[in-house]
Every structure is written in structure tokens, then in C-alpha cells.
Image (cartoon, rainbow, N blue to C red; front, side):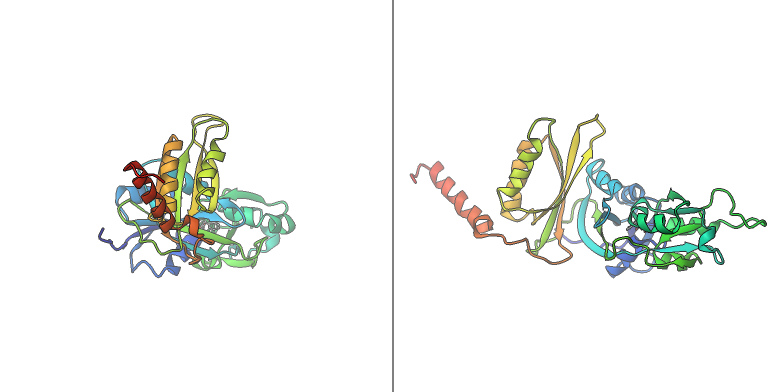
Length: 323
Ligand SMILES: O=C(O)C(=O)Cc1ccccc1
């Protein structure tokens, strides 16, 4: 299959988000090839409509866990596949309009995942501030910059007066840094994924991941059965998330990242079993692990050769041979 170069990327915007930093860390795209989207669903919609070739969106964070709009955006709608992942260490500053002292901050805005990672800092330093969600960290910075103090020195109603954001976003929107190093858990890492329309399957590298959504019937042991298909083939999961299907309380799908590539026999074999077992399985791609770590010990029993030998044996049996 010919590999089409990705030239136009949507990213969770506006300018100055962690997602944009992650995109630039990939060395892509070229001038004018990065298009800010107002939300994750909007970025995915731009891929589906063909307006862009790919989107870079946050998938999960080492402190706050999965980013639901990304998980749900893959699970529903026209098929999309992950073709690359990238990790970025994130830390936060408090951006304020120039001249605003910390004591004057009444309302703090940011992306919910950022707010969750600075909860302790906010409780210690701004215990009375109202905390409001924004579409992204940079959107919060943009909103703060747009707010102006009224002549009496109070903040115009509605605008937040501080943003929890990357230092780059504070700079981009002309904000002062009222505080730096806000993260409650230093060294937190966010994983971003490159999402495309199906049609391009990255070649196996020996250190890959595969992403799936499994829709299981509402019955006793369904999750155990699903997990068994991976475990019995020596496949480790690197992420497992249950998400409501919106059909009613108690009806869930499972979003799974596992080690290995669909071209690996053990992964292909597990997918066949899951297809038989589940109401539906959506394949969201196989792609290289960004840490390059090979699947934890693919032992001889789970290697491609072992599957080949076993299948040859079955073929001989079906041809009437004994053994
Ligand atoms: O809002 C951003 O800057 C994002 O890219 C999403 C996000 C939010 C918090 C941590 C990591 C990524």
C-alpha cells in the first residue's frame, strides 16, 4: 500500500497548547500545515471530512488517565486509525494579565485534565478561587488575555483572571507568570496520538501497539473472557478503559491498547477470537511504540513460529494424518 505523506494536521488548539508542542516535537508539519481545532471532536471531524490528513489529540495522562473525547471519538462514527504516538512531559504555570497579583485571582480556567493535575496547588494557594473548565490550556490563556480590568480595578464579569497553562501559552497571549511548577505530581507525562482515516497501516517494527474498542454483550464474565484472549496469547495490555455506550446504565464498551502489531500472529489470533466473542470489535490501528520498547518478553510459545507450527499440525490432521 503506498504511503501518502501527511501534510496537513489538525491539533487541539488554539496556538500554545501542549498538543501543539507535541506536534512540533514530531518535526511536523511544514509551514501552514498545522490547523488549530477548537476541540478534540472538531479535530477528528476535520480528519473524517478530509479537510486535513491527520489530527494530533491527547489520549491519556499518567496522572489523570484517559481523555474521554478521544476514546469516544474513536469508538463511534466513521472509522479512524492511530498511526503514531508521542509522549510529552507536562508542567504548568499560572498565567495572569500583566500586573495582576496572585491575591487578586478570583477565577482560574484551564482544560479539565490540567485542573486535575494542579488540584493540590490550587487548594494551597488559591483556596477561594472559582475553577472553570476551558476547551484547552491555551484557550484558557487566550480568555484571560481577553479579559480586562474595569476602571475600579475589578475584573470584567465572565473572564477568568488566571490560566493554568504551558509557559509557551502564557508567552503567546502576553500573560505574566504569577507562579510556575504547579503540577502536583512532577514528571507527569501525556500521550498524544496521530489519527488518520483508514488506509495506511504502519509496518511492524517489533515494538508496536494496537488499539481496539470491544463492544461486549451484557453478561457475566464478558470482561474476563475478553482479557483471557489476550493473556492466553502472552499479550500485555498497556491501557484498558471502560466507557458507557450511551445505551443505558451498565452497558459498556472497552477501549484497549495492547502490545504487538496486527501482523503478529499472536495479535491476529487474539483479534479473530475477540471478533467471535464480542458483539463488535473496532480496530483502531497498529503503530510503533514511541518508547521503542519491545513487547515484554514474547516467549517462544507466543512467537509467530509457534503459531505457524501449530497451524501446520492442524492442517496435517485435517488431511487425515494421525498425530
Ligand atoms: O489543553 C492543552 O494544552 C492540551 O493539549 C490538552 C492537555 C491538557 C492537560 C495536559 C495535557 C494535555
